[in-house]
Image (cartoon, rainbow, N blue to C red; front, side, top):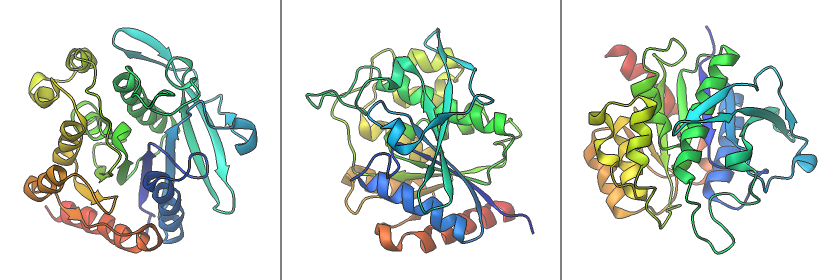
Length: 273
């Protein structure tokens, strides 16, 4: 029987970025899922604060070289890769000088979110999907972690739904308590229209805050996982009322088995349907 394939797309992964729920779970989960018998791939942004020499990142020339147009501007896509020590897994990094060169993740030295976080999220999500296509690898499950991945379910379900690499993939979105406190660019809606989205699909994103973004990801995904022990009550209610299958919070040390079973449940239910 062919192994099921799980694509992990995460805002952060330890040991490259540490000390957050996302980074720790996104480190433990791919290893555990791989050890359970599934095939995995893992992606994250190559933030400028990641020490490339220490973690031995190197560019994958055969995957780099594409350009992605974001808001009518061409941005070169660079792919790098590194191994996680003792885990027998590789992590692919989405890189671009315009978006990820700065020596920070999503906020400046004063803790203020970067003005272009919307475009960075667009570039990251599309960069992962285009790279997976170039790899010729068809995932059964795509598991997104963190708000920087929240647009990715929308891309998969609306713009890539007829692509043979993703047409049968089921999307799982993990909701974390990692809110940003600044609304996205007021032109974000127009940027998505330029990308090719129908107005009806993005109507809720005319004004984007953290909860609005997460609610859309919840609605368009095939499964939702509560990634942090406590999340905004508004998002808890959104999960309950969405009708999307959901999994309660499990701490890092015990999350692998229930999430692995959740993947199988989603695959089996949707095959039966």
